[in-house]
Length: 209
Ligand code: PRP
Ligand code: URA
Image 1: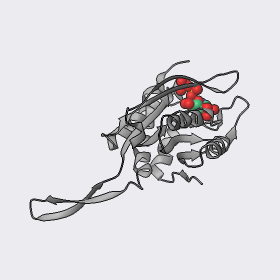
Image 2: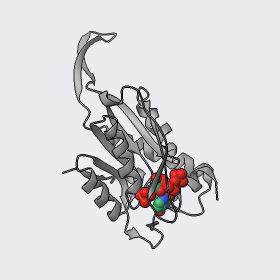
Image 3: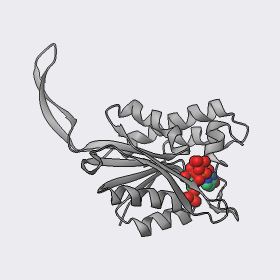
Image 4: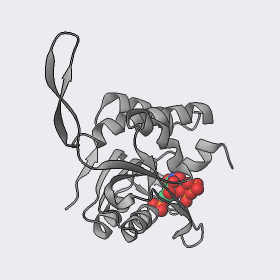
């Protein structure tokens, strides 16, 4: 069964408070989402394998560790996942970026796909799917399904805020996918918005609405 990892770092908790605040404007919101994503990247990459290489310091030869194993790919779910890309790339500059375009139909609340462009070697990469919000779980579950259809086998999901309902859906649909989340909130409201949440992540990032 997959792991659910909720962040407990004070910096993440602090920044998330201001991300949630409705008085935080788009510029500050974007900066905070980027910063929290960077802090979460540290946790998401905790289990990456290492290997020893030999180097020479100015003083002596030594063996030292570098990241080994498969290459990484990050896959933001459009639009709001885009806000998390730069923070991840700050720590993982060699990662390739794929994009999955999905929006949630306001009537049916089901995800509708409109774009999918992935690195050609997606099968050989460990993938981290990015989306600030895991609400009903429909979008994340569908995005992970697209990646699996295209041969991906090692996938993690990273979100800022998740509902218990969304976690359950992704867990049931994809029991192999670990979920990293800055906060697990209380519930969904009647419009499938996360409570207390942060509102509409895409609108707040891009100033639409
Ligand atoms: C938001 C969010 C997730 C989705 C979560 O995107 O970024 O992708 O809703 O909801 P779910 O778990 O119930 O599927 P939205 O559909 O609003 O599209 P946008 O990012 O383009 O604004
Ligand atoms: N999408 C959002 O952007 N926010 C929510 O609370 C739920 C879905």
